[in-house]
Image 1: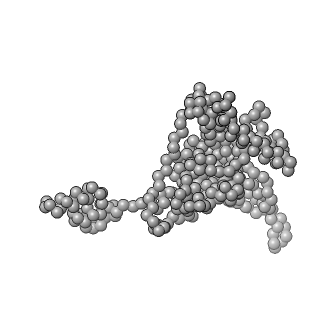
Image 2: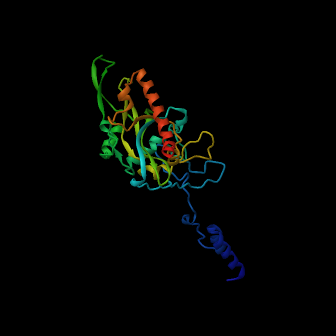
Image 3: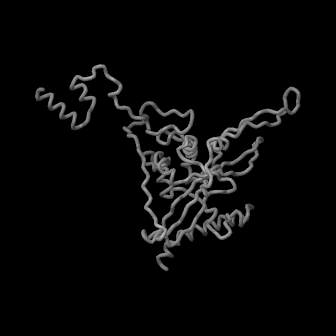
Length: 315
C-alpha cells in the first residue's frame, strides 16, 4: 500500500464518509443499495390511513430525524408530601390557545390530528384504553380491541327510510363513521402535590380522555360522551415522538409531552376532590345560571391552587 492510499483510508476513517471510502478503494463497483444510507422522511410513522409522507425531502434545508425522549419525573415519596389535591379539568380545543389539537398534521406530526395519534396507538395495542362507563376514571377495566372499534365505528344499524318509488317505510342498513372533528373536548385528571423535598408544588397528570359529541341519524345533537381513559405516564414516550403545531414558528415546535408538561394548553376545572365526590355541574346544574356558577367556581379553584404553594411557605 502506497502513501497516498494510506492517507485516503485515514481520511475516510476520521470522517466516516462511506461513499468516499468505497470509491477510493475501488470496492463494490456494482453499486449495491445496501451501501447507500436511507433515512425515513420525517422519522415518524403515519397515524391515519390514506396519508402518505413525502418520498423526497420537502423543504429548503437539511432536516435530521428527530428522536424524542421525555424527561423522567423526579420520584416523590409519600412521606415527603405535605399537601395533595386531585383535580379534573377539560380542554376545549375550540379555544384559540388549543388550536394545536385541531391541526391536521404534516411530516413532523405523523400526518394526523392529536386524537388520530392517540387512536393509532390504541388500535395497534401500544397503549391501553380503560373503560369510562359510569364516569369511571380509575383505570379499573381495560377495553378489548373489539370494544374500542365499537366506539370508533359502531355496528351496522337499520333505520326506516321512505322509499321514493312506493312511499313505504323500509328498513335500510346504515353505518356510522368516526369523524375526528367530533372530538372537541379532552378530559384531564391530575394531582397537585406539594413536595417538601423539592420545596415546591408539582403537577402530575395521571389520565387523559377524549370526549366525543354524539349525533343522531337526523343530525340532532345528543350530547357528549367520554370514549375511554388513557394512562398518561404510559403515553409520555409516544407523545415525545410527535411535534405540536406552533402558529408563530415552524422551526421551533414542542413535542406533545412538552406541551402537557409545560402547561401550554387552556382549560377549566370541572371537579376538585370533595367529600360528596361531585362535579361542579352536579352541584350547580347545567342551565345558563349553573354554567356561570361553574365558570366562577372553576376560576376560584384555579386561583386557590395557584396560591397554595405560597401559603405553604408562609404558614
